[in-house]
Image 1 (tube, one colour):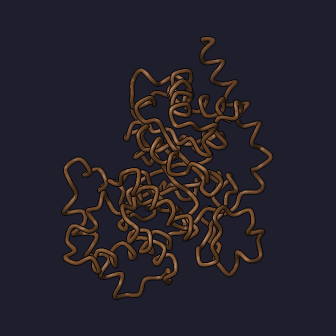
Image 2 (cartoon, rainbow, N blue to C red):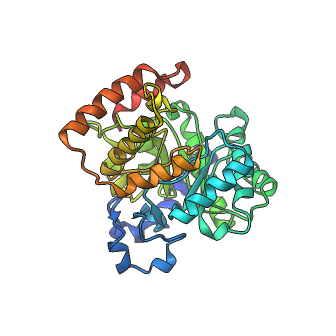
Length: 339
C-alpha cells in the first residue's frame, strides 16, 4: 500500500475520532423553531433576530438560521445588493450565500460594517475542484486565501466548496483532498464550518457518511423535489446531523416563466418556499433580485406550511410548466425530483 493511501486512512480516522462526541447529540435536520418558540431560547445569540421570522437549528453548526436565506446568483449590482442585504437584515434573514469570486467580493462589500449581522457562506468556484488544476487540498486552500484577501475578509463562516455537478466523476483521492482542505481551513481559523455544493445525490450521501468533517451541503431543491423511495439523502442528513441548503428553489427562475402578472409571480414564489419549508429538510437560498422579492419570501415564511388540496393541485401544474420551460443548460434540474 502506498504512503498516500496510508495518509488518507489516517486522515479519515482522525476526522472520525474528532466527531465521535457529537454522535449522541444528533438533532433532526431542519427542526422547526417557530417565532413564538424562539422566545424560549436565548434570542440574543440569533443573528439579526426578528420575532416575525422563523429560525431553524442548522445541523451541527448549531446556528439558528432564518427559514429562508439569501442566495448569491442575482442580477443586482453593488448598490442594489446593499439595499437587498439591508432589507434582509431588517426582516431577520441571517445567512447570505456567494458562489463566485465576484459574488463574494460584492457581498463582502455589502456586509462591510455589519459583518456580525449575517453568516457568510461562499465558494471560489474558479479555484475549486471543477477546475482540474484545483483538486488538491493545497490548491483549494490557496484559492481560499486569495479570495479572503480580495474580499478583505478574515474568515468565512461556511466554506462550501463547489465540486463537479456529477460529483461521482471525482476520484476517491479528490474526495479526500476536499475533506482535508476543509479540515485544514478550520484548524487555521479561516473558516468556521465546511461543506460543499453538488448536484449528485449518491455522491453527496457518500461524502457525508464517509467524512465527518462535512458540516453542510448545498443541493438543488425545487417544488418538484421529494424524498427518494430508496436511498434518500434525508435519513443520512439527519443521522449525521449535516445541515442542508436548497439551491435553485425557483428552478433558475423557470418557476415564473408562465406567470403573466407580478401578483402571480409572487404567489408562485411563496408556494414554492412553503412547499420546501414543509419538507423540513433544507433551508432555501433563493437568488432574490429586488426588495419586493425579499418581502415576498419573508411573507411566505409567515404563511401556513401545509398546502391544501387545491394548492397541491395548483403546485403540480406549476411544476410541470416549470420543467417544460427550463433553459437547456438547466435540464439537469429534472434529475432532482427525488433527493
